[in-house]
Amino acid sequence: MRQNQRMYPRTLAIAEDDLTFATLLGEFFRQQGVDVTLFNSADDLLVSETAYGYDFYLIDLDLPGVSGLDLVRLLRRRLQTGIVVVTGSSSPEVVDAVLDAGADMYVVKPATNEEVSIAVQAIAGRNARMARVTSTWRLHARARTLTTPGGISLTLGDNDWTVMNALGESSHQTVSHAELCRLLGREASDEAANWLHATIYRLRRRVEAASSEPLPLQSQSRVGYTFRAPLVRS
Image 1 (tube, one colour):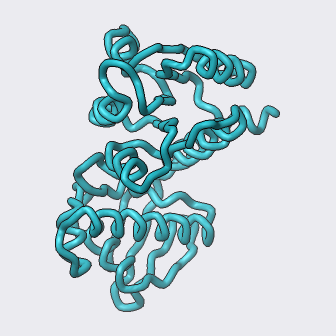
Image 2 (cartoon, one colour):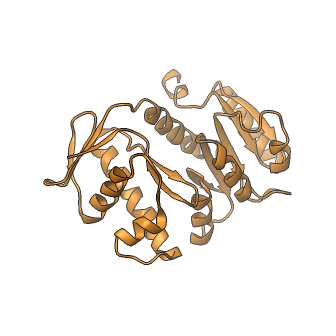
């Protein structure tokens, strides 16, 4: 249990208007040692003195007042902490909107405490690993490889190389969705943005599967992507 607890955030805000669901969920996380605060609406959270002071946020999509989607956008403009959305819909449109707003992950209702917990632990653990990433990543143009700080080299396909090379040229600046789509030979559109999200997701999974090192590639809500560690091109 102690090992699992290290994957939980220290503090958690839950914005959920279903009192029964929120209470049970809050009690579950408190049992894991998490300091939990419940909010009945996005408005209640935003006017609180600690609105931007939590390590993690669980947000219901259908909230009274300010919507859950707008709440995610507002939080992501100021914070890089974990955000998981709980929604009753798994339609592609809703999923795209949730991720585009800046959420790290979504969980579809009805969801058990364990299902929500798995999502929270996954994001909290990834964020903790990323926070420890200070070593240099390397891009080798001739071989078209990406070498992790741990020395694992992966040969990149055309799309992955294009993305990583653009990030390397950006000198830690955000590369926009539109620019990445252009470099990948696609006109900017909702369809192209979804395809780009999927490309980035596969790249992350491949790197983490090969090296157990999280790719420090951070999504900037509705803007683009930033590489959050030293990236040397040679």
